[in-house]
Length: 262
Image (cartoon, rainbow, N blue to C red; front, top):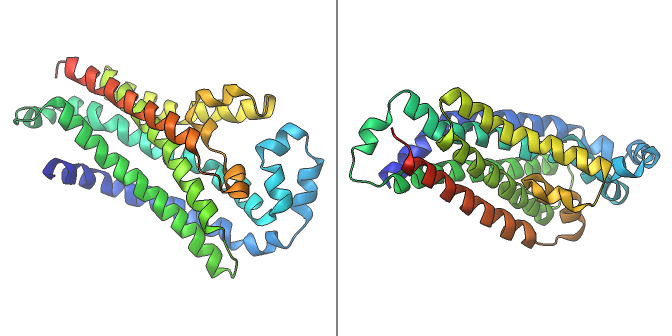
């Protein structure tokens, strides 16, 4: 538990800064929500877009629930990228930064396995990431309620859970990259790239070939807020695939760390 508490404290400052930035963005978007909810201009605009763009921008959600459609295209679509960048940055730092600054010498001298050390530190990051999603969804619901609206609590809870799964896989992949990287700078490039490049790929594929299976080769392909908000269907596929991928990627990071000379 001591190592776990140390891992949590290591995440605290970055978590606070990034969470405040995200919450401020949520407040800005939510403040305009009442005017948008009563406006038909956005719905008309969606109807004029090509089918592929309507799909990417939550066309069905916009037509049936303009408020949630607005929140999707202005905020919810990008939450996994924003939180994924935090996760990729922190996961890259868990090993590479410590090894570069030679702060692992003491920890590796303790009677504890490398596997337990790495898993405990990553558990601290996963806890911080889950807390960020919890605060993000809670802030969105609170801001909407403050504006006199009636947010879809169940739907946005599912959206937050689905987003957490996507960023969990992103963090596990960045952890493996950190364990295998030559230095901290290289690990940082991999960590941020793992967060940003798949998001750009997912966006491009959705525009070019909406509904195709190629979406599911990246974690963001399993993040589908319009579907969750309209159906309230539990994301079983995302749970199974991204959960299994996160475990396998973490095990890969452990094996790389165990074989590495520090």
